Length: 334
Image 1 (tube, one colour):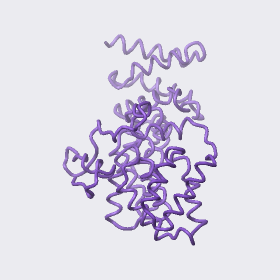
Image 2: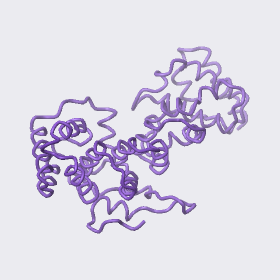
Image 3: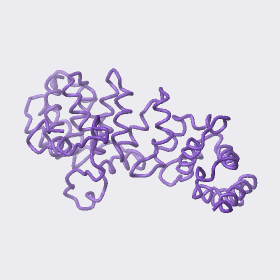
Image 4: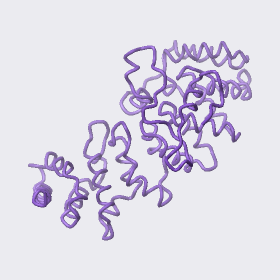
């Protein structure tokens, strides 16, 4: 895909890196795509979107500092005066004090409460400029947070936002904007399939499983990300209606195998809550083992059986007995 700009902005880098899918009908970023490294070498070791992902899932959120708040006010006043260069400089400085993901509410509240000094037209004009021209990650995110509030209706701008959303660093901010669009869920589903890291995790979390196609994708591919499947395990379990399949009579070996992968991710509660959040967690594990006794052995996840024995061995005799029986069955077949 040809770049829509020529100033080597972050948008420009993303647009120039886009490649077509195998069928030639869609676009995505290469798996090894990364935005330019951050100045801080420690931060540069993080995958795109990782710092925001860690903030969302693992950090206790605190009010922004007085220093960051003062910079935000100065930056917005510069936007209101139409001083693009000054605003850009201040937002870059603000991004060193507070990440955009942590002050979205403060930024949007300021715009809503200062309509006279920061007219929507000027805020929109600056946000469009910064989103597609800035070389600074946090400045792009501040701009996207403005656009979420101000709304984007122009088709060309929407297409450019879709391109930005392909980067795991910006996916969640673009999703916030997409949620205002007429076919929001379709847009988020398309973006979920085009991303593979933190972007997919955020998209899966906000995807409404309203169609058989979405539910089927959540079952078979939703947990597939380059970070950890555990982050999406609950969303995929509930969204795919896996429980109904598991306790029903019409489950196929392919569906059983997919369910096993999700259960394995649910049992890995290191990064986030999983199986413990399900009301029938133990029953689900037991149902998987019972069904496994009549499934083709290639559909059974041997590592999952081992994990079940590690977790339930000595605490649940019924599950332990079933897991040992399935394990022995698979081993005998091998």
